[in-house]
Length: 498
Image 1 (cartoon, rainbow, N blue to C red):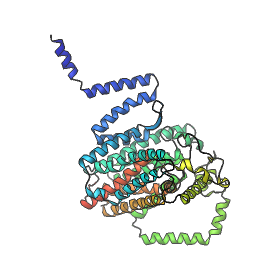
Image 2: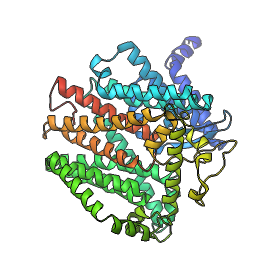
Image 3: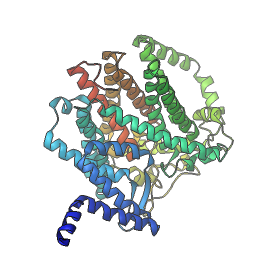
Image 4: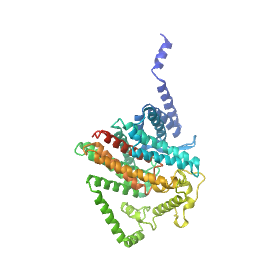
């Protein structure tokens, strides 16, 4: 018996890749046994990264599924905190996307589309303002990190959906399925506290660092579940019930988050649905707005007194859903509202100080302190800068529009508004040009509704600097672009296959 030949034949069955994966798996098991979470997760991350590099499409599906389950983990040995596995995956996807775009390119129509041009302008202004930042190293680091997250979200989705009519559907349904699982788990976690309002702040953890970020994701997913439900109605009873269940589960996440802005944003998104579905003329809508403004102007004294007398607070333990809504106009003693006003006014003063290029990307949380007025601060205000910031301790502007304008200049704020308006207009145009018998019509409707939720939510909060929200948001924009171009080129019912 030739022992050497036997060993060679046996070892040849294992390629170098499998040996590499085996070593990483052993390292992961060692990390688990030593209760060293970063050491346990890192090898798994490397294995997934290898899969992503070899199969970029699968990489996007893995990212979409794992996105809601990602959690902030501190890696002490390298001194950073990463939302794991999402952020490492996005960095790998960025490299893979740039490589594929360089190798294969994109048709000119994708690059010159209005949303693509606005995307270039948006990212360009982030970089320019960072070079003129009051703290160049911090702004550049944050700018590079943010751009790395949104490159795969926009350009990668465009690249992969170009020749694959099922990609967009699969991507968003994976977002929906995965996030519904988180909501389902959190429902029972919240039930253990008798759905107490005070529990909403930490029920979202560890997957979401803030209950409002959790609510924003719920607001994104509810329209997607809704359009799938009505698409399958009379087509498949089982699937109709399934997507209706997912919509209810996501709605439970929204309601139990106690985020007033997110709840209002979803209501307005559904108003958009009925506006389009019922084919209401724009002039009727405009006339309605004018009538409301006239009535409000005629009763401004009564409205002012009503707002002044409103003492309903949003932060009390006994606050119910009705009181949450009522507290929106309480600017007398609701600490959340008063602090939000303080942050807005600070941002406006910062814009007045540096209107053109702002203070630099990511600088609001470091620079807004001297722009507060003592008479406007609250018991939850942060009054002094800290030598070292931990996540969320510096505070934020609580408005996407004011944050972008204060950090990157007024032109950035205007660019962002134009981007949102263009996204809604192009979405509505897509919807009007598509057949109501096509899934593309329903998906376009769902995306338009989801974008609308963030148009509204952006007045009260800002989350585009968080990887979970920015990836989904820019994936929505890429989908609008992709559907728009395919509809123009083909006008087919099957530009998004079910």
